[in-house]
Image 1 (cartoon, protein in one colour):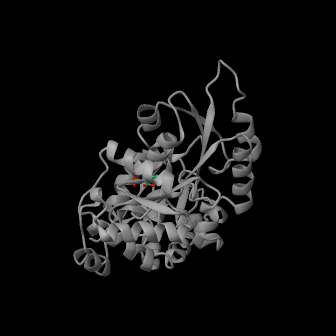
Image 2 (cartoon, helix red, strand yellow):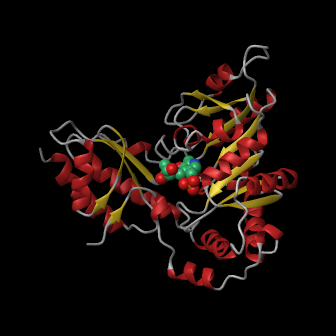
Length: 345
Ligand code: TLP
């Protein structure tokens, strides 16, 4: 039985076209700066996001953590939204790699407000840590793929600048945000010192993220990447997948968003299931199911046995993510499975 895998947009397999591009990639030793395909990807990413330079890194976590390390000193404090990926899902690496503490600020569906951030910025005082960095996430994962409006981004980044903070964007899914709003990724990136985005999520590459910034910062980040063991060799094979993804998979993201809305509507029609259809902005659907005799784990198993994979994000709370390996028909099929599993006692 073919599975409908809605656990994440990280699960996609490279398409035939992408595999062809990978197989034919020109390569060289990237630690010597000699991989022409990596160089091309880094230039392309920088161009698309309107920055001077780019750096190919293996993962989104490494992209974020290199930037935190770049912008901070041990003992500093970094403001993040309280359910940010950097805080929740990066294994405590900000404290272990950079020696910083994270200051979690609650947001609405993951989105921070100007006043909440201003209240969290420390005044200079001998006793307190120094706030030196604000990290934002676009789209916001735990917020349900929510999108910061450009004006809120501007207000937050202006505020951070006023207090002399550095600015990093965890733009793992910034292309989804852009597909939703029509605001270009460069307009978002312009507001930040560093931006990291993932090729291995909605864009469908098997591996990789790119950090973009000015040339001086990228040179420092390149050194930090080597220090952490992220200097890769004939990695043009992977960069080729990234170039292919940027060329072929950006314009189709809107399709994933429509599929997510369709799925949300199907879920909404199931008695007792709580889902806010209007809050589905991009490719994620968060929903809760009613109390029953079945545990969250049991529900996941039943969905799996019926051919649908999902992730739980809390007790009776689930996340479904659409991507290029699922279709509109899959949404209907998954909707049927959910209607069966979530309403039977
Ligand atoms: N997110 C994954 C899991 O780690 C939760 C997912 O399935 O959504 N920033 C954001 C906003 C992310 O959602 C992720 C991955 C990352 C960074 C890290 O990317 P990778 O997995 O490439 O290290």
